[in-house]
Image 1: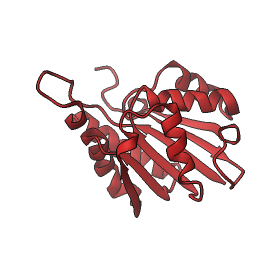
Image 2 (image 1 turned 90 degrees about the horizontal axis):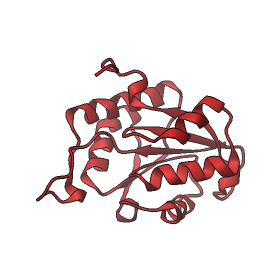
Image 3 (image 1 turned 120 degrees about the vertical axis):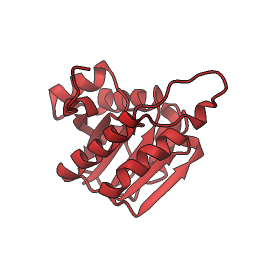
Image 4 (image 1 turned 135 degrees about the vertical axis):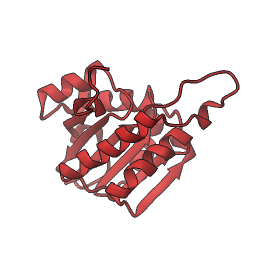
Length: 175
């Protein structure tokens, strides 16, 4: 079985004049959310074999906050993942066909569009997860897809099995 986990970077400082978008940092809530998401993924039994991370600061900081729990030995930073669109993301995933569980830490709108595209083609094993994915893809959100086929990446083979959002178990849900 192969897995694809698409994760949007965690909550980031807003863009403002004088700050390069590539250099925007995580907020304290973003760091806490990333740590929480790593725990949730581990508790669900997802062991990441390869982690591909955008070179943007917010994605690298999300990775750093998750790494103590995920303990992924094979971690790679790719410039092409920064603000990649659907075709760019598909190409990146295809470049890593031999990996059991591949996780990408990227950006919207591309990461959400890519996840929704896979959902439209392959469907979902969980109707509620499909609804959550379709409505929005907030910071720190993860979409988990699985395929019974161990061959090359083909979107039609990857069914959505879960969507995890930081707010689902955040203690400050009402704020």
